[in-house]
Length: 188
Image (cartoon, rainbow, N blue to C red; front, side, top):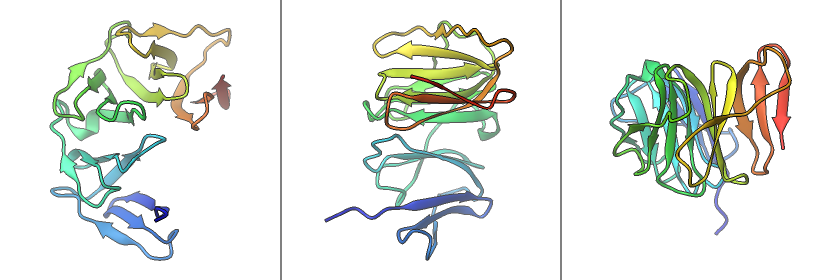
């Protein structure tokens, strides 16, 4: 059977889900939380989703039908971004105002993942399955960590005052950086 195409909407009322391209919406039960501010999915989701809500981080393995709250060391207000790996179903990265956190066991335990990153605000994070690399943005600077390594390294740029705010990638190897002053840039 062909899987249905799902559409989600993160709202102050909660998480809305549609399986008919927005014709009808269902309010998803996220235990202990109402306002949902972000939803994250890897390129090859396989049913895995992560959401940031007023009550913290929640995970689903069945396309959002059921949610489990994760124990995260910081409040939801300190979370800036998150990313799920397409290659390793248990790997999560969370960008916070106090640095980067990672989990290798689907959010059961967390550790600081900032070797090579300054210990400060990380605003964006992204797994790129096609590149076998993770990317992080710390105060506008782009860092990368190759698969199998523990350390992050800065990606030098010839663009003065480059300030990346957000990262995005399609399922290709191209990674896009949304900047405050130069528009959208990409890296092949």
